Image 1 (cartoon, rainbow, N blue to C red):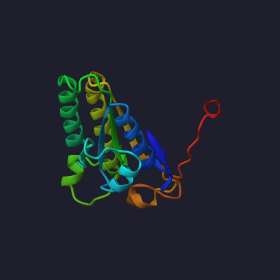
Image 2: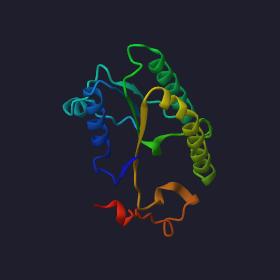
Image 3: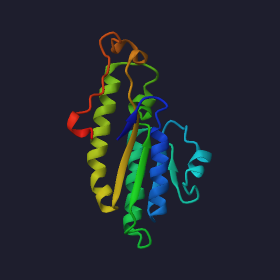
Image 4: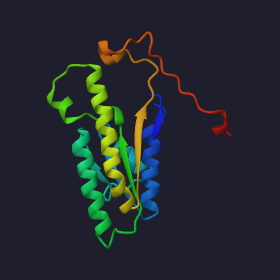
Length: 171
């Protein structure tokens, strides 16, 4: 997981990582869920746009099904079989469930819980595909310290998020 505050370089880190993966002979897949991927900046950082596999499927179910198909194809194609694969999903918060897409604009906790459950199921299901294709999956997500934009289901005065890093991890 690549996470941080707004404008902290999360996507830039993902772009540099994809460029490194490609430079080492690997395959990069970029899921631009927010549709904010900056291809000119990617190219400047060394991403080979001609070989970059991209998607912008916002529904969790459809995205992970497409990733499974791509990983199966990669693992079964002799030319790609032993190449490492890097998948970047930018950003997790923009992912939606099929039910959320069909349900309109209501904003409630059931949608958030449904999204979390669906993402959990999708991750469990994709792990064998990741392993079989020598792939790693990176999620980009923004840390928010105020949840006031999430409707009446969240009380912004009581839901401040604090990111705590254990001292033994800081060197």
